[in-house]
Each structure stands twice: as C-alpha cells, then as structure tokens.
Length: 182
Image 1 (tube, rainbow, N blue to C red):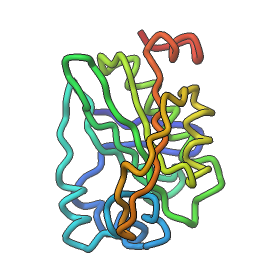
Image 2: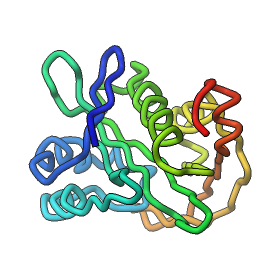
Image 3: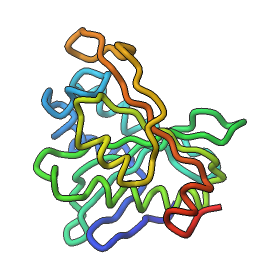
C-alpha cells in the first residue's frame, strides 16, 4: 500500500524494522494502562510489528510518522473482524510526547478515508475503556456512534475487569459525514 499523507503525517505499513520505535512507548505502563495487553517486551513488540496481514489490499497495522523527519510517533490498527460482513476494528496508540496535539485524530481520519474508499469496508468499530476520555472523544469526533457500554468485560494488565465503550460507523454514515467512501 502506498503511504497516506496528511498535512503533518505520513501513515505507512508497519514493518519489523519499526519495532524499536514502537517499543519506546509500548513498554510504558502508563501508555498501556487502557490496553488489554501488558506493556510490551522487546519480543512482544517484534512479534506485533512482524505480524501484519494484508486483507483486501489493506494491511492491519500502520506506522504514523512525522513528515519532516519520518520519526515514528504512533501506530494505528485496522484489523479485519468479519470478512463476510466487511467489518474492521480501528485502534491507535501513540508515544506520550505526542499526546494532546491532534495526531491520533488526524491519522485515524486519513486512514478511514482511505479504507472506506479503497478497502471494501461496510462497518468500522472501535472500543476503549470509558476512563480513556481522549480516545472516545476522538471516536466521537470522527463521527462514530456509541453503541454500547459493556460492564467489566475486558481484563487489563492490572488484573482487574474493566468496562468498555463500543463505537461504530457504517460506510453510508461515513460518506454523509466526510463526503467520501462508498
């Protein structure tokens, strides 16, 4: 897949060579506190970066880099959930030095535009811990609707059961919102 460019970012396929930059933030317990996986070890980060299946021309994992210098500042995922119903799940994790600057929303918007236009997608879902206000605000800002609040259905690295918000957007909703897609 060709890289996707925004005003400030380049979104490209994540590869094994990216693992050290991903590890720089994915090993941080504070960054991973709302993610079901524990903070990554070097081996887990390598496995994450190496496993990137392509379905319908779309990889599952993307590196988000800054335009001026190519520095990797975060990752996006767009996992296939159900091929029959053309459903994917989007997610993001960013280095804390780049939180609060609009990068996650900018990157997710660009990836969704591309995915709905090119990826034979009917529905995209996203989930987060309700305490992760920044994440669900991004989802709502992108036009996703909250479809559910599941009680204690996700076990996080702290060992406890936590709630989860479930969001989704359909291709026709996306097209009406941004004037693109199918």
